[in-house]
Length: 290
Image (cartoon, rainbow, N blue to C red; front, side, top):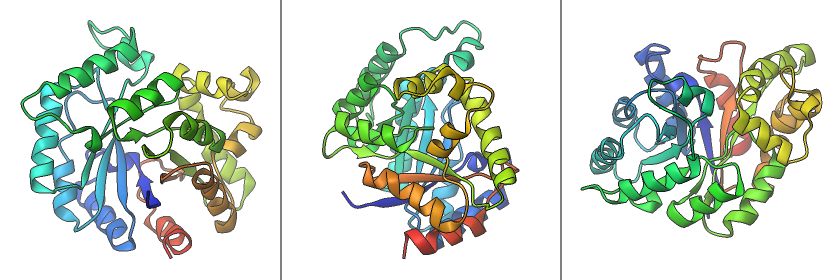
C-alpha cells in the first residue's frame, strides 16, 4: 500500500473555531499535498454535519471521521450521510467508527458502556443492513486491543489507533496482517525548548490517560501505573509524542512507518489545542512529502 501522510486535528470540528478559518486551513493542507484530514466526531450526537463543507472547499484532500461514536449515531443516519458524501465526492470520505469511552458514554442519559466489542459488531451488522450500506473498504475502526484490531481486518478496511507508541503500531500490524490499512494518530511538538515542549505534551496526555481504554492499552505494552499517573512520565511521553527539532520529530513519525503503518495522521500540538498550526504542517511537509 502506498505510504500516506495525513493530519489529525480537533480544531477541524467546525464550531470550536470559525468556519472561515477551518476551511482556509483545509485548503492550505490540500495545497501542501497531505492525503487526508482526520477530525473527531466522538462526543457529538448525530453524524457530524461539516464534512460536506470541507470536501466542497478542497480539490483532492480526503477527510475521515476519527471517530464517529457508535453510541451517539444511529447506523441508518451514518449510512445515509456517508452515501451522500460518496455520491458528491467519490472516494474522498472515509468513515471512522469507534466505541468511544466509558466516562463519556456513561454520562449520557439511559446509556451504559457495556459490551463495547459486541456493540460494535451489532452496529456493523446494522450498517450492512441499511438501504445504503457503507462498504467495508470505506470504513475503518478505532482499535487498540487485539479483538478490535482483528475485527478491523475482518469487517473494515483497517484500523485507526489513537494515542499509541510505535511498539503498538508493530503489534497492530502483526494482528491485522498484510493488506488492511493501519493509520495511527501521532501527536508531535515542534519546539526545542524542553520545558515548553513537555508542558504542551503533558497537557495533551493528561486527559487521555484518564480514559481507561488508553491507559489500559499502555499497560498492555509494559508501561506502569507510575508511567500513566499524573499526566504521564517522561519515559511515556518520549515514546508517545516526538518533540524537538524537525529532524527529531520526523524520526519519531518514521518509527511508525517502519513498524508497519500505511498512513500516519499527524497531530501538531501547540499551547492552544484548537488552533490551526499551518506553518508547522508546512515545515513537516517539506520533510515528509518531498
